Image 1 (cartoon, one colour):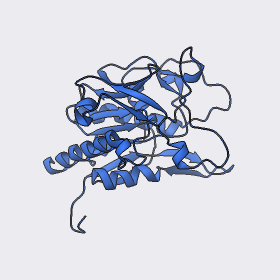
Image 2 (spheres, rainbow, N blue to C red):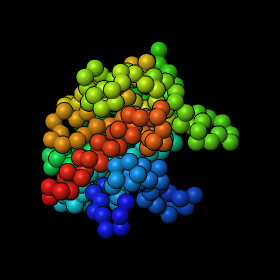
Image 3 (cartoon, helix red, strand yellow):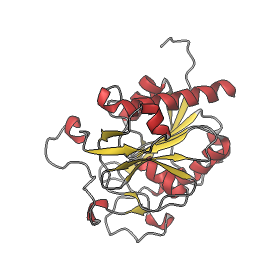
Image 4 (cartoon, one colour):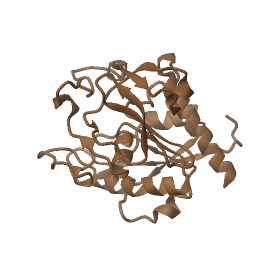
Length: 259
């Protein structure tokens, strides 16, 4: 990349965490998402601090060429989709919930490219009126989709390819990758239950969990995946993830050039 080259600007809403056991809050975004954006989407990332209702979202979103919704440790609070209350001790992130669920419809309305990963897929589904399973592994006939547990496990084990997915025939993912089936990693406890309005299924797991969606009424680019596409998209086994990052970057560049 040249130093004088212009890059599309991607906004990443942050997760809000209390550091250690103190009351010190931090707004954070995972490093892998940012580096994958730079390398494969040819975009630069700016954090959007999750501040809930304290934004004019139309004004905010209009300053970006795309929005990336990343994974996160906390789950979306179930009152947003009519679910049962979480048990005591469940990690929550109300600032991110309220920020992102306000932001998604504005992105669609303004045609701002939108790419969701893991929690990001769940956020899009909830924003579009869908619901979530609280714990997939407790459902009859479902696999355990959670991150591998154990001491001293490294990224290679955490992000290992865990199960196959089938891509919807002639769907966006299918046409983009040229494949009908592939394997993905799996680090999520929740998943889509009721599919939101104006969403199309792009990929489904071998135990019938929705792994990829497309926003039908998005005028530009609106997709999301349940797996962690930010991990090593340059590897051949992760080719679809790379294709999605590249397509997102292309959509963001077109928006940059048009505005």
